[in-house]
Image 1 (cartoon, rainbow, N blue to C red):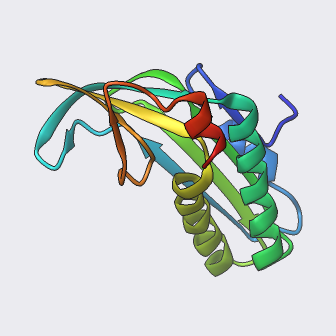
Image 2 (image 1 turned 90 degrees about the vertical axis):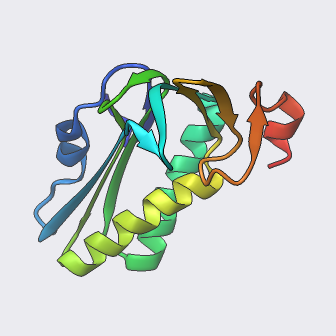
Image 3 (image 1 turned 60 degrees about the horizontal axis):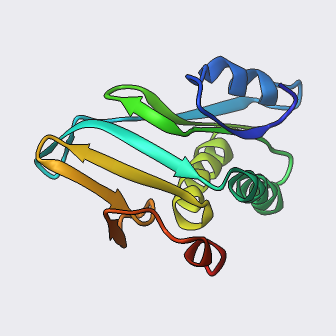
Length: 157
């Protein structure tokens, strides 16, 4: 795969992201791996479901990679996010950032995951042991209860 940012329904291999950013100029490659946890605020999750408007989500992931290049310079970023059904411990997102020095790699990686939660149209449905709930945004500020956002809601974000 030639893309450096992508969504997939297949399991993510972190090495694919690392290979995409490894280069001679980089003295650091920081990798963030987000996984599905079993408990959230004391509630047991059975599994998660992510849905997305893929073309827009990939565009926003590319925007984040561009923002990292603007903020830190001399960086390379790869981001993969999984969609579909994910089981407990499955990898949901991988971010790899290479920079000449480690401090920038750590900061840029943290920046990427926070920006993903802010601007990328990916919705999470929690399948709790006592019911389900659509999480409206990845910062978990808005719930859509029993449905994902309408097309109008997607475009107005």
